[in-house]
Length: 246
Image (cartoon, rainbow, N blue to C red):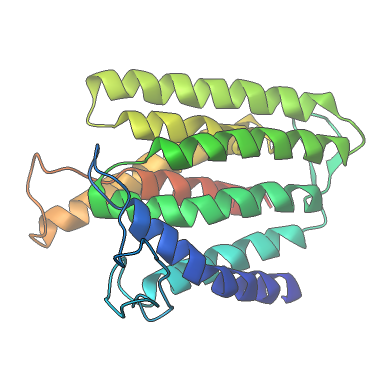
């Protein structure tokens, strides 16, 4: 309980920055980052207004805060988990070294989810730093867990598998290459918990996207052939898989 509350508070504290970054990157492909004030100053307050000119922008006020608090609470609850029997390392694995990895992915995930929902793209400026940071933090997590190389190897294989699958789908299905660039980071994180968790995260992502697409069609908010932001479903599916493994 303490971990979940702490995570939620941290998420709320980070939400103004996450909101500003999401609004700044929510531009169509090829356009420069959004600038609010004439002098290039850009900082969105929690109510959605700019601190420089008071112009409103970015996601609907309250949504980023709610998402950041929810993701923070989920990560905090995982941090307090005592451990599990890993199918990769055949030994007891503690979750706390993964807090930094999950927090890193969670912060980027909130931003990416809102950017994708707004403009149907996942910018390289966000997905590439996410991948590099995730790789570095996974290595650190391994060093903090008795140098068990099996988990890190599974992270590598799962990341490559996710990237290959989504890359292939981007060539033949209505999935963007931004999704393919996000996939290796999610696959690597899920691989830490084993192949069952990685497969579950993959399945959950498609299930959530299907349900969301069906809901949009049934409510008349979209029609067949319209674009669907797949990134939020991928991110939420990965989070659900981690929670299930914990």
